[in-house]
Image (spheres, rainbow, N blue to C red):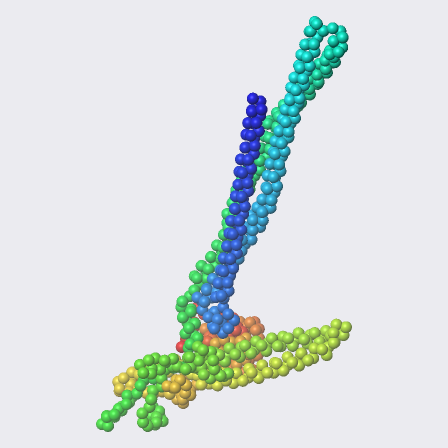
Length: 593
C-alpha cells in the first residue's frame, strides 16, 4: 500500500511538471510570436516611410526653367509645401519603426533568452529534486528488504537451534557431533544481524521521511512558486510591450499633427486671383488692341465725310496709301475657322529663340532682357566679391610673406578681371537691346491718351460708317510683328518692372509724357532715402542717405519714382532706394495690359 501511495504521489508530481513545462513553453512561444509581430510592423512602417519619401521625391520640383516658372503660382507652392510636409510625415513613420525596434523588439529578444534560461534552471531543479527523492526511496526499500531478510534468517537459525536443543534422546556425543553449539552461535549471529539491519532501516526511514517532507512541502512548492513568478513576469512584460506599442504611435502624433496643419495652411494660402494675375503678367504681349476695320466704299457717288469733332487731320489722310489696306491682326489669328496660337506666344511658352529674344512680343522681350541683365549684374557682383577677397589676401601675403606668396594670387586676379570685362560687355549688349525695345514700346500714359482718342474716333467712325486707321506695332499674319508707327503717337519709354538696386538706367522716361502743361505736379506723399544715389543720368536727381523728399509721382511699374526737393529741383530716383509714404487720398498708378 505504501509503495502504491508513493508511486501515485510521484506520478502526480511528474504530471504537474509536464503540465507546467508545456504551459511555460507555450508562453515563450507566444512572446516569440508577439515579437515577430512587432518586427513585421516595424518593417511595414519602414517600407511605408520609404514609399512616402519616394513619392515626395518623385514630385519635388526639378531644377529647370519649367519648375521655376511654376513656383510663382500659389497653388504650385502649396503643393510643394505639401510634399515637404509629407516628407516630414514619412520621417515620423521612420521614428515609429525605430522606436518599435529599439524599445520592444530588441528588448523582447534579450528577455526571451533570459526567460528560456530561467525556465530551464527551474525545471532542472525540479527534476533533480524528483530524482533525489526517488533515489532515497529506493535506498529505503533496500534497507527494508535487508532487514526483512535478516529477520527471516534469524528466525530460521533460532528454530533450528531450538529443535536440536529440545531432542531428549540426543547424547552429549551427539551434541558435539551434530554441532549444537554451532547452531547456537549461528542463531545468535543472525539475531545480531537482524538487530543491526533494524537499526539501519529505522534511521534511514527517519531520514527519508524528513527528506520527503522537505520535498513536498518546501522544495517542490518553491520551484512551483518560481515558475509562477516567472510566468507572471512574462505576462507583465508582454503587457508593458503592448502599452509601449501604443505609446510609440502616440508620441509622434503631435508632429504628425503639425505636418497635417502645414498641409492645411498651405492649401489655405492658395490665392486664385493672384495666380490668374500671374498668368496675365506672364503672357502680356505689349501689343495694343487693333483699330476698327475701315469701311471700304465701293460706291462712286458716295463721298466720305468727316465730322468737325473728329481728331483725324488731313495730313493723316494724305499719308494713307491708296488701295485696299489690310487690318493688323491680333496675336491670335483665325485661319480656316480655327484659332491658332501666334508664333510669338508659342515661342514664349516653349522658351526657345535667339539670344536677344527677338522672337517674343515687346512686353515679354523687355522682361526677358531685364531679367538677363539682372542675372549678369549678380554674376558681376560675385566676381567683384571674389576679387576683393583675393586682393585682401594678397595684401596679407605682402605684409606677412611667411603666410604665402603674393604672386600666387595674380593669375586668379587676372582671370577674374577678364570675367568681369566679359560680363560687363554682355550687360552693355543686353542693355542696348533693352533700350531698343523700350524706344519702340508706347508709354503707359500715352496709351491712356490713346484710349480716349480711340473712343472718340470710334464714335465718329460709326456715324460715318468708317474708322480712322492708326498704325501700331501689331502681329502680322505670318506671326512676326511690324515696327510701323504713326509719327504722332511715337514716344519713348523706359519701363523696368524688376529694378536692380545697383544698375543706372540708360534712358529715362520722356518728359514730354508728363509735362503736358507748365503747372508743377501736386505732392502726393513723402519719402526717405535709404541709400545714396548720385543721379548722373539726365532726368534723375541726386539724393543723400536719410534725406527727406516730396513724392510727386509714384512708381508706375518701371522701378522709378518722381520726387521733388524744392520748387526747382525734381527728378527720378530708384524706387528700391527710398521708403515711400503716400497720402491717404493719393491715387495709385494705373496699370495697363
